Structure formats: structure tokens, C-alpha cells
Image (cartoon, rainbow, N blue to C red; front, side, top):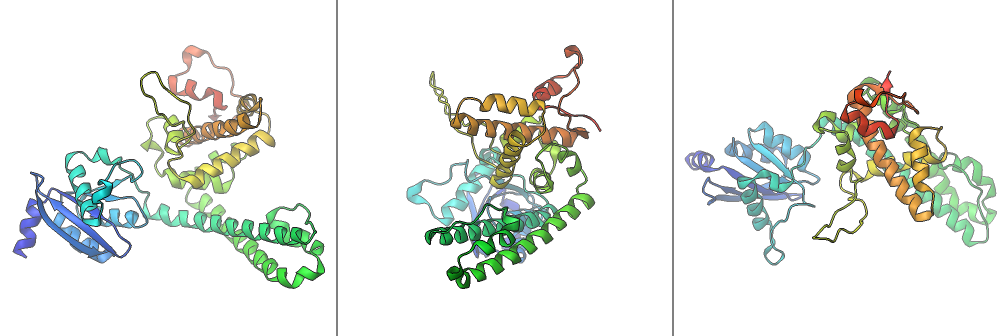
Length: 369
């Protein structure tokens, strides 16, 4: 016990290399000297017990599967927890990379300046549980799409062709067109597709109930054409706290919908989007942008996007991303302002409009509900 208490008093920074079963840790004192190393099981009980010896110290872990619950356990134990973004901070050199060195590297960086780890803020446990419903639905939809493509490919390989049909109605509208010789082989796939449709419908109802009971702010987001319950709830749960961003424009950058930069001297090439942040939400926003441009009602935002899309196939793809970025910004603005979308905002004298509103006028900003 004396040894543990003395180490706790000397420890100012700890790095943990998180493994699926075993995690390595390294503790440093104020002078940067190693005062302890060890391993622990990657379980809530083991982490909480070990973290009590680091109370008050800065503790760094990398973002990953276990980082959500682990960061909460460390914080509850009294540690100053930092979750590092592994895609942005540079860890140990390749030639000496191992679990011990990774843990020490995290400890040394967090001791000097946690911002060098490009820290990530995890969502709450409740948000994570609710987001699991959306993630489960996304996997079922993905599995359904793969099965539909498999069925179409098998039929096509024997000279047949199935009619166009929405995935939700694929089984009802295409079974009669399946060649008789293929029906014994494809019948199990059709049964699985029917079961998937049923489970997806159940999750759709659960998402609707979650939106109404816990996240009523999603109703304002759904006032934007093309934004449905899944996109609105995913947006709210992914961002968590809208006030974490000082400007609505930061929401677009957070979701990776901004151009990458590699400027050096006079060289400043045009690059693709950053693609950091949540890739699923980013794909949903692109789908919403496609709906808005192709089937949405007339609006200032649609006209802006169609003007960008005029000029060729490559330009259309860039226009979709640009509209998706506008949607990310607009949804945040609606969320924090309590307003609803208006296709064509009323003209307001320029001198009476603040800078934040001017930044969003081209989005078809909202007026009070």
C-alpha cells in the first residue's frame, strides 16, 4: 500500500496503450521520469481500480472501441482524461513501435500539452446507447442491399433480369420474375430479405419514438427537405452538444466536409474533402443533398446547388458534397436557434443582420417557428 500511495503522489501523467484484452500503461512524474509501468486487463473493474492510484493525474488514451467507457471510468476515478485522435497525432517511430513505447509516448505528450494529441470528446453513455439503434439499422440495411445485389446478379447470370424495385418492396415485386430453375436456390435469400425488412421497420419505429420522447429538437432539423428521422437523430447524437462549436460553420469541418489543405509557399493545390469525423453521418448528408437537388421542392439552397452542378459529371459530385456541407451547417444553425427552415428567407436590411446570420443566408436560413 505504501508503494502505491507514493507512486500516486509522484504521478503527474499516464499513458495507456489500450488493447482488446490487455492494456499497457506508463506513469511519469513532474520531471518526466518513469515512475511506474504495468499491464491491466481491459475491463471496467480493472481500469477503475488502477485509476484510483492516478487520481488528479493527466491520463491519455487513444480513441478506439474501448475508449468511450474507459474515458468515463478514468474521469469518475478523478483523472484528467484526454482521448487522443490517432489519425492526427504522431506516435512512436515505426522502428521502435510497441505497446510499452506507445504508452510512454502518450504519457510524455499529455504531460507537456494535451492539445498535441488533438483530443476527442466522447458522447455520453445514453447517447452511445441510442446511437447503437441507428448503427444496428445501418448494418441491416447494408446486409439487405448486399442480398438484393446477389439475387440480381444470380438471375442476370442465367440471362434473366429482375424489374426495378425499392429494397423494402423487393421481395413482393420481383419473386414472380425469378426463373423457375433458380427459385429453390433463391428462396432462402428471399426469406432472409423479408425478415430483414421486418426488423428494419421495427427499428424505424424505435428511432421515431426516440426522436419524439428524448430528442424533440430533431423536429426542427426534419423541416429541411430530404432530412428524415434517421439523419436528424444521427446528427443530434453524433454532435452531442451543439454549443461545443462556436460557429455553425465548424460543424461542417467536424464532419470532414471541408477541403484538405497542403499549402507550402506558393503551392496550394486543390484537394478532396478531409473525410474526418463520422463517415456514416457524412454519407447520410450526401444522400440528403442528392434528394434535395433531384426531388426536393424549390428553395434558395436547391438553386445554389443546381448552379454548382451545371457543367459535367465531376462537377455534379462536387456540388453534392458542397450541398452536404451546407446542410451540416444549416442543421446546426436550426438546432441552436430554435428555428425552422424557410426555402426563401425574407429580405432583411443588411445593416441589421449580424455576421453569423450573413454566413448562413445562402443556405436558405430559417425564420422563427
